[in-house]
Length: 200
Image (cartoon, rainbow, N blue to C red; front, side):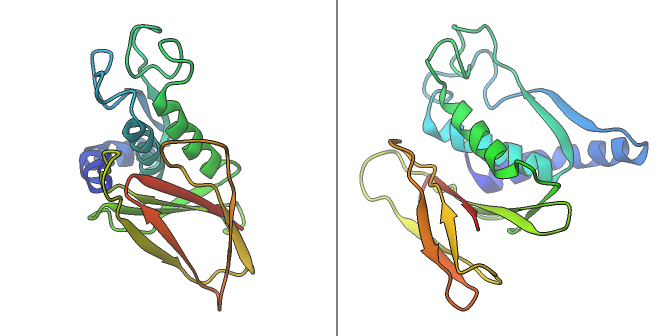
């Protein structure tokens, strides 16, 4: 689920994407996932897999990969299946968060340079107006002990407040957070292994 790891691993697709675009074709990942062979019990059904899925899909979109199809293996038998073995598999939540962030967007830009554990994506509409921001702290948290947090500051915000829905574990009731914008800036504290989709 390391953001810098995802960015580094996906560099291999850049030349192929550019070649496809040069001849007017879309580049599609027809089959992809984090672990092959049906997944792994200690990896695929975890919240970390949800965060990996979210970041992987968003970064793939930054690279102009037009579609990303995840291999689910044999439904009911694979650990990374989104449905079947579990009522709702963990990676589904990451895919849902990515879809919700990009809904009605025309293009996406990455705010960070991909060299750290911290990610930021902005989704724009067709008029180049920011629709949403996704912030992500990919530092590892195992579920016990101190969960460190980092501050993320956004500036140039036109609205007086922004709304967010934290993607965190253990999950519970859907909750929206409203944060006041001061002099065009707003700061969020995001814990390790946590993401925050933000909208005006």
